[in-house]
Length: 286
Image 1 (cartoon, rainbow, N blue to C red):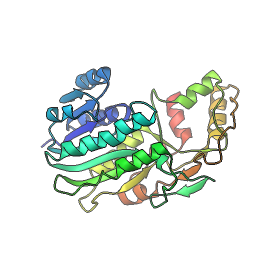
Image 2: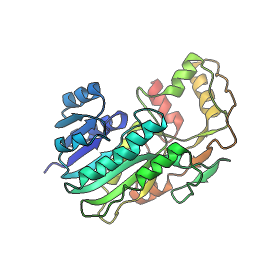
Image 3: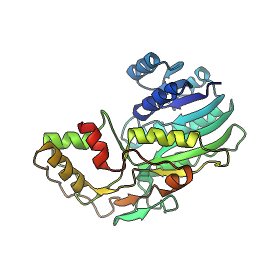
Image 4: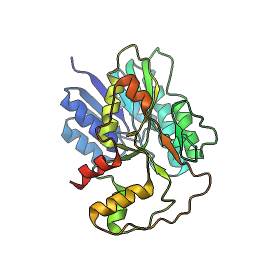
């Protein structure tokens, strides 16, 4: 029988996840707030597409909560605090309420490494403290806090804390280098990245993990944290252009840490195809 997957917040990562799941012969349903994305998903072969905001409970009656797999990979509707509240916290509350009406084997919520406030280039893992996190990071933590419900309706849950996502049609840093745009912040601040395609494969690694894995929090990065200035300099050499300057205006409490991905590598035998920014951007430049 075909596995069933519902993707909530089916945008940049979710659309690629849907494509890969359809190639596996799965039956896919999706919720997106973007009408054009919804039309693309329908053309792709997604069985049921609902265009709605995740925090709007009206979508509940249009998607079946009896699913093998559900992935909430919603992005913030806006970069404001209100956008984070609506998309992440209220959106996850809505998803949990919907799940109560059915039976779900595995649920994934994609969070962010922005929950780690550490500075000083410290190495952080899933056991590191989140004390002192920003208001937006705190909202993500609040959404995470309701992502492990009792097993009556969801057998197991995973939280994936994603590093900065880049890939086809999403490469702001590369665009800035091409245009010679001055960079905000400090050149020495660490940038942790994950390629979109590697994020999708990590999601599948969680969904298809053995029953002995009852769900965990996993950091998701390529495991090669690099200074922003190093990345910009490398891109500039590849493009044969002068590297843009950095404003060097980071405050002392600006997060500056290295994200460890060892837990998911060791426990789920996942490894990134694009192991560093060099491999990822080489593929984009090609």
